[in-house]
Amino acid sequence: MRILFINPNTTAEFTRRVQETLDLYAAPGTEAVACNPAAGPRSIECVYDELLSAAPTLEVAISQLDQYDAFVIACVSDHPTVYALREITDKPVIGIFEASVYYACMLGYKFSVVTTDEAWEPLLWDGIRHFGVAERCASVRSTRLPVLALESLTPEETGRVIRSTSEQAIGEDGAEVICLGCAGMSGMDKRLEQELQVPVVDGVVAALKLMEGMVGYGLHTSKKRAYLHPKRVELPNLPPVFGRAYRD
Image (cartoon, rainbow, N blue to C red; front, top):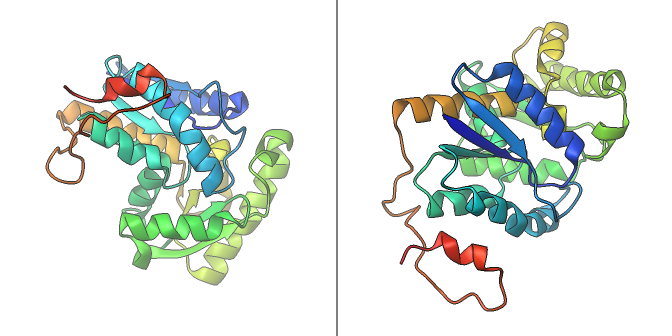
């Protein structure tokens, strides 16, 4: 099977980290490929950045719809392209944030998300409510680091900050599981798990394993109601690739 992971920002270092994680965890027979758009924000720090990244991300996905069996949006947010892709294909689609919190709910009663900048705290809470698991979330805590700090700091420096914030979530909020709240944190899970002595979920791995299971099981996205295929409309001045998502 072939699974495409799209990092919706344009920071190649984050995409490289995602690919390293995929190479480590992909099952035999799974080709998991990470990529990012050529245009768009270098990091996604707010809703505005999300929306700016959406069209370039969709362009990447639409151009490769026939080449992959499943699609993953590699951003810890409730990214709008997840739902758009579910409309335009019946192949499985998920975001790494959604995958991580569903895993967390099966590993403990309460989980916390440890993220980057504090502006993400309300946005991730909105996503958690949308996923229907708000009562299982102990907290969303930020490290107060901007997203791109994960690229510039050493792994040791980043690890110390994430560990300290996670300890607060466990000790003060009652978290039993930690979800890593940024794609740039991919690959840090197992060391943190040893130090914290609770499960730590990397959304990249969670999404990979969910997609391997769905594709192997032969599951498809329902086209009843929520994810009906979009009806064709005119798209003045937009690139022709977006018209390919419609069915005549």
